[in-house]
Image 1 (cartoon, rainbow, N blue to C red):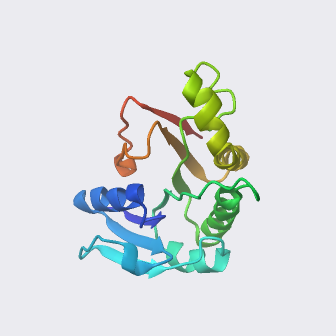
Image 2 (cartoon, rainbow, N blue to C red):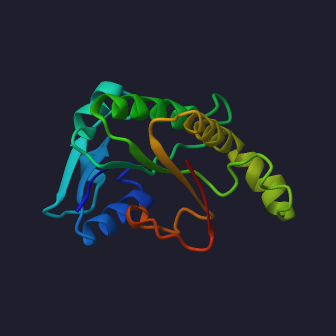
Amino acid sequence: IMKIAVVGATGQTGQQLVNQTLQQGHSVTALVRNPGKLMVTHENLKVVEADIFSEHSLKLHFKGQDAVLSCLGFPISFVYGVTGYTQSMKAALNAMHEVKVNQIITMTSWYTDPNSGSNSSFPIRFMLLPMIRSVLNNMYEMESFLKQTDDINWTVVRPTFTFVVICLVVFKVFKAVAIITK
């Protein structure tokens, strides 16, 4: 049985991940902004309110955990750009260092790599990707940041669609997923 902190637990993927992790008998600490949005209840589930951009807030809840799973999502921004992925990951890694948690699994997107859409269909290349480019760029920055981390074991899962939910705890993966790992 593992003790697992899940960041982004109130989203569609987060709730599924929490459910699957609990069904496998693990203990889950769900870090959320709004505890009322988490529709999962279980005796091995602890729901806590946390600021994902605050190292101090995160380390309070990461202490004693075996791993951190992050399935955070941030909205598209055409005006300001998206920075939530890198900012939250920096806070998470700093908190993990302080409390000696050395494993994180996070999720980005199939098209995170700027070159990955070059062979895609016209609608994806010229309509979808430009619309979500600010999100994808920040995901790519976060992945680049993780690649520079040498004292934390990390895995990035890139599902083709966010509704393809994977139980990351046991590291089983569907065929429609790319994985990058240290």
